[in-house]
Length: 384
Ligand code: HEM
Image (tube, rainbow, N blue to C red; front, side, top):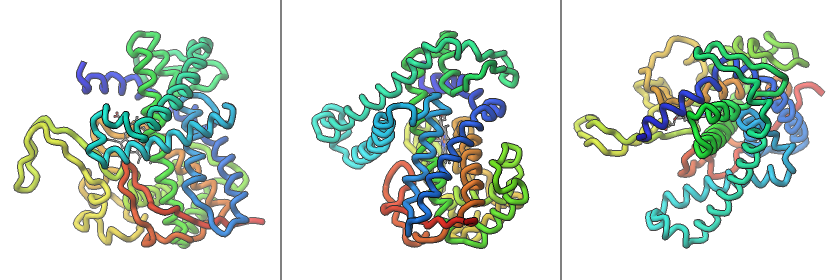
C-alpha cells in the first residue's frame, strides 16, 4: 500500500468524526473546558500582564484530550497529565533542532546525541500515556457498542450516555479490520499534534491583535451580546450567527497562519514562472507570504476583518490557512468552533488590553508560527 492509499483509507475512517452531528457531541466538552479557561483567566486579572500562550495551550490540549481520546487530563494523576503536555511541547523543540542540523539527520548519529536520547525518553512517555488511554477505551466495550454506523455517513446514531471520542471511531474501524493497532496509535498521535498547538497559536495571535484594536473588540462584544445573554454560554446555533467574530478569526489566520508553510513532493513537473520543477522535487508553499501578497490583499499588513464580510476579491488559493484540496485540514470546523466559543466567552466578560504589539514580535523558525518571546496581554473584568 503506498502512502496515498494509506492516507485515503485513514481519511475515510476519520471523516465522520468531524460530521456536524458528532461535532455537536463534542460541543458539551468544549463548553466545560471553556468555563474552566474563563475561570483561569479570572485569576489572571490581578496580574499586570499574562503570557497568553500558556493559558490557551492548557485549554486546547485539555479540550483535545477529551474529544480525541475521551480522557480528562485533570482526571489522570495531574502529574502524569502535566508531564504528557510538557513532553509534547519539548518533542516539538527537538524535532526542530534536528531539522536545522544536517549531521543529525541519520538516525544512528542522532541517537548518539543528548537530543536523540531525550527524544527517545519523550516518545516513550507520550506512547505510554496514549497506550494507557487507548487500552482503557478499548476495554470499555459498552462504549464501542454504543456507536452504530450505517453506510451513509450522514446517518449514524450514538446511543447511551457515554461521551463519544474520535478514538471510538478508530476502535470501531479496528474491530472491522480496516485499521490495526499501530494505525490507531498513529492517528491518535496525529490528532494530538495537529489539533492542539495550531489552535493555541491561532488563539494567541487573535487575542494579541484584538488587544491592539479596541474598536474591533468592542464590535465583537456588541455582536455577541445581541446574540446571547451575558450569563449564558453560547449554543452552536448562537456561534453560527457571530459573523463578525468569524471574520476577525479569519483575518487573524490570514495575518498569523499557525501552519505557515506546507510541503509537497510533486510527481509531475510544475512550471513556476520561468522555472520548471522536475518530478520528485519537494515544494514548499509559504502560506504566510501568500497571505500578504499586495495584489491579492489590499494593505496586507493591516488588520481588517471587514475584508471577509464581502465576497472574496482574492484568488481561491491565495487564502489557505487550513490548506486546500483533498489533504486539507480535517479539523477546521472543530477548530473554528473551539476558537469562536473561547473568544466570544472571554471577550464578553473581559476586556483584553495590549501589552505586546504586533511590531514587537520576532518570529522563530519552527513548524508552527512562533514568537521568540512570550506574547503578553492584560485581562480586565468588564463587570465587577
Ligand atoms: C487553527 C487551527 C488549525 C490550523 C491552522 C490547521 C491547519 C492545518 C493545515 C494547513 C493542514 C494541512 C497540512 C498539509 O497540507 O501538509 C492540516 C492538516 C490536518 N489537521 Fe489541522 N489545523 C488546525 C486545527 C486542527 C484540529 C483542531 C485538528 C483535529 C482535531 C486538526 C487535524 C488535522 C489533521 C488530522 C490533518 C491531516 C489531514 C490529512 O492529511 O488528511 N487540525 N491542518
